[in-house]
Structure formats: structure tokens, C-alpha cells
Image (cartoon, rainbow, N blue to C red; front, side, top):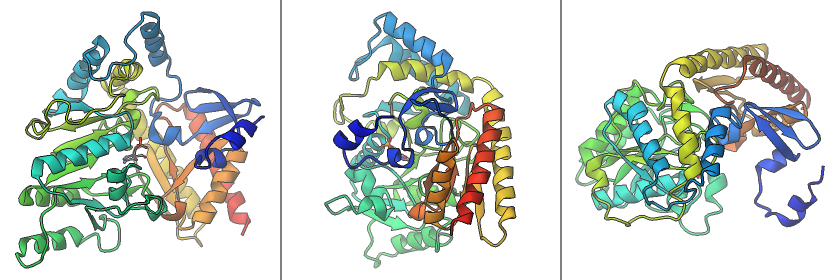
Length: 419
Ligand SMILES: Cc1ncc(COP(=O)(O)O)c(C=O)c1O
């Protein structure tokens, strides 16, 4: 396999390819096949993009038909038939059944674009600068989102000060149980020197941060404080939504009422880019026409595939599979942790985002390598990459799931043997 063109000509910044040193040639549902014919089970799914697998046949057929009919592939934010179809379907399948009243803002096509737009809208709406973000939070690589991202491994490359963010411990971090209450008390104290923030930006399940789960009670505390001090409550659901945790949104059933919800990754269904914020109408009214623009906001292929993807949410079939398969993954991880009682490993997760916290980044990296060498793609996350996160496509066949978990189990044993 010829990797020379990448190694000679592609930027040093490339990352995932170093953990998966092969050349992928094709992919179907939960498998990718390399140029040399090696088949890999994909428990990484494009970092949480491919919830419906690689090359979903229904989406592919709709995209081919769209291309063959000379549909409008690129449209800025002009009106197109495909965008109308997407908007109507999203409204009918996701918003109306939940009685949610939001406007859809298509931003530049990646998650970080959605977060930038949300932060800007919060600052515009409130006339305030600071945003509260949490330890372990991951929100993207552009400056505003990077300022809200906690991990120093990413922050150190910014090159300019990352400002206007107040950092509080996430619920599961040290001090996280009292931090929001303490911050609220300080804001109420006229001599604290603090000014109220524009927004609280939070993930319900911190994905890149190590699969850390917030409780509904803690999230309500954050939301209540936001309301009390006139700040917006923003949920970054870029990685945890679109069915990943067992329902469309990660916060479904928690009784929360976010002012802005950021979505990207799985929204386009097929893996082509699209990002969209759901803004409460009274907040969305802060925008003037064209106040936040971007060339790639009208992604025809993503609208087409994203509309088909919403079919997965018109009944309970896929979400009950997520519950079943999520339990299979969790049971296996718990068995693995129990088989290594000398290690203090913790299993965490919701739906089909499950993880084994090994407490040791070097070990998790060895597991990733051993898994790759035996046909499984996984991606560590969390501080120092110590958490082995499993996010296979929600559509993964049971046999592939079982085989992938067997490979993982062996990879862990192999890595544990290499001190
Ligand atoms: C919760 C969350 N927010 C934002 C982002 C940034 O998205 P993107 O990489 O598409 O810019 C990510 C990416 O992993 C994410 O997990």
C-alpha cells in the first residue's frame, strides 16, 4: 500500500491516519476495507458522524437520484427544494412531536461553525462577553469554540489568548457537585466583582472529554442559573444527538428547555457535512439578515441524505436497537473491567456511546494499536486519551458488534501484557 503521497505531501497536522496506518478504499455499514483487502470493524464511525453506517443504501440511492436530476448541490442560503424537504421533515419528525419551537440556522458545515454561531448569537442577544464552559468540554477548533474547549492538548496551539470564557468544573469533575451553586452565589453577591455571563455552554454527555455524563438535576441547576442571571442555556449536542444516546437528542426526557441547540456530525446522515443550530425564536430575532454568513451553508447532498436519515426516527425500531446494542457493549465492557480487578477501570456511557476509562493514556493507545492490527478501529478520548470510547454505527449488525467486542477484549489483554 502506497502511503508515500500522504507522508510526503500532506500536512504534518494529520492525526487519525497515524493511529490507522493504512489506505482505506471502501466502506459499508460498520466496516471499512483497506486497499490491501483487510476489513476493519468501525467502532469510531467518523468520530460520531456515521450513526447510520457507511454508505447507507437508502441515502445513497437518494443522493444518486439527486445528482442525476441535476439538483442544486451548492446553494449558499438560497431556497431549494431539498432544503425545504429537510426543514419540513425535521420539523415534523423531531420538533413537533416534542412540542419544540425553534428556528433552524444553517451555519458553516462543521460543528465548530455551529458553536461559533451560537456563541456569537448569545453575545449579541445579551450584550455580554463571557461564556461559561465546563472542564472536559469539547466544542471545536476555531477560536471562539476553542476558547470554550477545555483540553490543553488543543488549547496550546491557539497562538493567541483564548478569552471570554469562565471555566467551571463539569458535574463529574472534582468540585463539580458544588461549582454551579458557588458560582451562582458569587453572581448574586454585588461585591464579588463578577458580571453575569452571556451563556452557559454544556454537553449532556461529554464525548471527546471522556464520556462524562451529566445528570438531569445538575443540568437543571445550570439552566435555572442561566435563566436567573439572564444568560442563555446552550446545549452542544453535536456528538451526542441524532440517536447516539438512545433518543434523538441526548437531553430527551430530562425536561430541559435549551435556548440554543448545536447540531452537526450525524445530521447529514451519510457523512457529508452540515451543521444547524436550533435557536429559540426570540433569540434568533437578534440576527439581522446576513449578519452571520458562510459559503457552505446550503449542502444539497447533506439535505437529501439528512432527510432520509430522519426516517430512522419516525418509529422506535432503531432506538430500541440502540438500547439493546448499547447494553451488549456495556455488559462486555463491565466483564472486561471485572476480569482486571487489579486495575481501577470504570465503565461509563449512554446508549451507543460507551466507554472504558483505563486511567492510562499510554495503555489506551496500545489497545488502539493492538485493535487496529487485528481489524478494529477505536478512538481514545478524555484526558491524555485514557478513555476507550466505543461509538459504532447505530446500524451495526449484531455479528460485527460481537466480533468487534471480541477483538477489543483481546487487544486489551495484549496491551495489558506489554508493560
Ligand atoms: C460536542 C462537540 N462539539 C463540537 C465539535 C466540533 O465539531 P467539528 O469537528 O465538526 O468542528 C465536536 C467534535 O468532535 C464535538 O464533539
